[in-house]
Image (cartoon, rainbow, N blue to C red; front, side, top):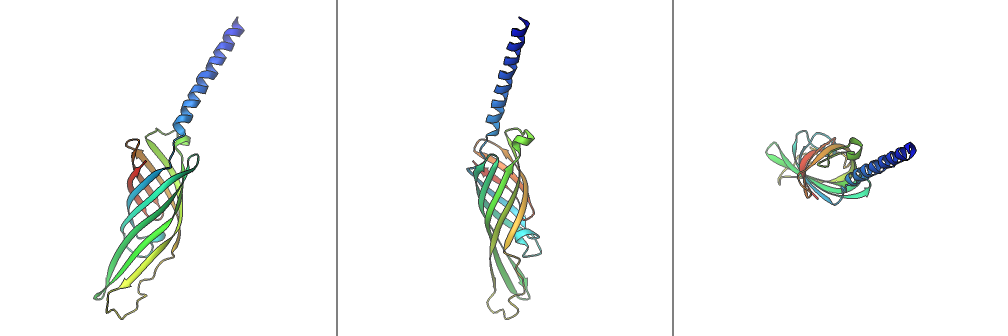
Length: 184
């Protein structure tokens, strides 16, 4: 009789543990892909915005899609533009970085609440740069030297899910750190 009771308790524990693990797996099978991220940041001193010595606003857009469990790829494009005065002329520059960002989500490892996502990422790409001077400038048109068009940046970030369809994110980067909204 004691063996049967012990066996029943053991089987019950396995069933409860299995149900608990199954519930956890449902929680952590969250899809991070299918997400449009719209961000605003400040760039200028490092990464692919190393063209100038001051900060400027940067608009950022990417679209994540699932590649593997907890891993996404996101093609992206950013935009920034500025002008500097040199003597009585203006120098104009537009910088458009294009690339792909690979992101690994640590929600499962950190046992995070389903409202939060935590990640590390890397982005690789190149910048399209358009530079021009005001009409009439006859000086050195190479006065401002462009940086390397290729870049590799690292990111750490988090997203808070306001609802199933909307999130708010903070992405700290070696290139351009951004805050913004995520549309799922």
